[in-house]
Amino acid sequence: MPKLPRSFYLREDVLQIAEELLGKFLVTKFNGVITSGMITEAEAYAGVIDSASHAFRGRRTNRTEIMYSVGGTAYVYISYGIHHLFNVVTNLKEIPHAVLIRAIEPSEGIELMMKRRKKKQPDYTLTTGPGSLAQALGIHVRHTGSDLLEEKIWIEDRGVKIPREKIYRTKRIGVENSGRDAGLLYRYIIKGNPWITRSPFNR
DNA sequence: CGACCGATCGTCT
DNA sequence: GACGATCGGTCGA
Image 1 (cartoon, protein in one colour):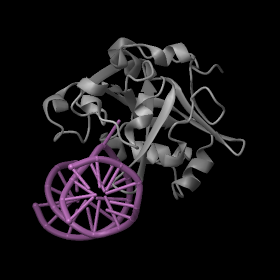
Image 2 (cartoon, chains in turn purple, yellow, brown; image 1 turned 60 degrees about the vertical axis):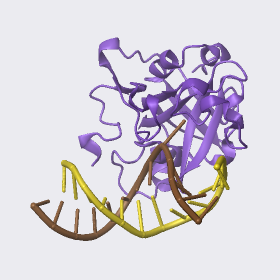
Image 3 (cartoon, chains in turn green, yellow, blue; image 1 turned 135 degrees about the vertical axis):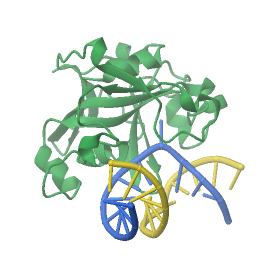
Image 4 (cartoon, chains in turn cyan, red, blue; image 1 turned 30 degrees about the horizontal axis):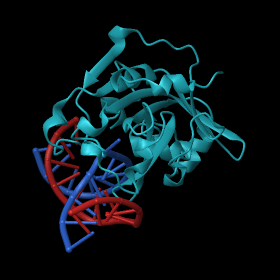
């Protein structure tokens, strides 16, 4: 299956990219072992003009520097000291757009994902929530800066097409105190899919 | 099912 | 020294 090409990530419209990432497959291959899942939920962060973005007003720190990399780079950071959150950097180098992947529907390597998540039975909490999916796929903050065209972490098109009417836009999660842009509808989910955070299925 | 809270630590002020 | 783009457990209704 083909990896998404660089040109997918280099585009200007981060909202369009976030929407198109629904139905694509996020894949990791560590020590020769593959785990993967279909992206069901993603949030766009529109760089320097987005008050909810880590790169708002051009902020550059050791952590956020990776956001200024070329599109198709992984931006992974730690939240609340525990959770590793995976983002896709988009747009040209120096333009810090990113898409946070918030949930996937498991596909390959479910046994290994359960082991990583310390779960005896599979359930909807296996890969819903940004920290949970990263743990299931073995994504760690040390992978920040990883190129998504390499053989470690990548995104594939497997021909799944999500029709427009099955896509919902809502407010982003956990950014209510981030000011002006907190209420923007930059979160995209596949309507009716149970592998979604804050879904009745996974509580 | 909702509300609350503790965990745990890198990052930034 | 405060706090977070979260999670999972507990408590109470």
